[in-house]
Amino acid sequence: MAKVPSAVVAASGLVGGYGVARWTRQRPLGGAVLAIAGVAAARQWRESAGGVAAGVLSAAYVAAFAGSHPLAKKVGAWPAVFGAAGAVGLASWAVADRRG
Image (cartoon, rainbow, N blue to C red; front, side, top):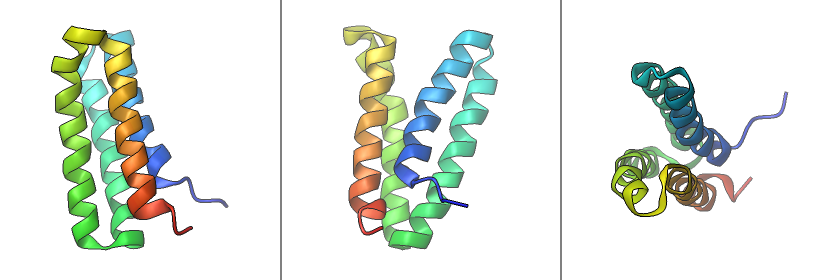
C-alpha cells in the first residue's frame, strides 16, 4: 500500500480540521481532526527526517494553525486556511518528503 506523503497529511489536517469545525459547528471535533493529522504527520516527519526536523515541522504546524486566525480577519477564513495549509505542506515536502 502506498504511503501518503506527510505534506498531504499535514495540509489535509489543517483544511479538514477547519472544515469539520465549520460544517458541524463543533470546534472540538475540528480540533480532534487537526490533532490526529498533526500526530500522524509528526510520526512520518520523525521517521523520514529525524527528531529535530519533526519538532520544527510540528511547531510550524501549530504556528500555521494559530496564524491562520488573525490572517482570516484580513483575507477571509478559507484563504487563510489554504494559505496556512500550503505553507506547512511546502515545508513538509522540502524537509521530509522531497527525498522520496
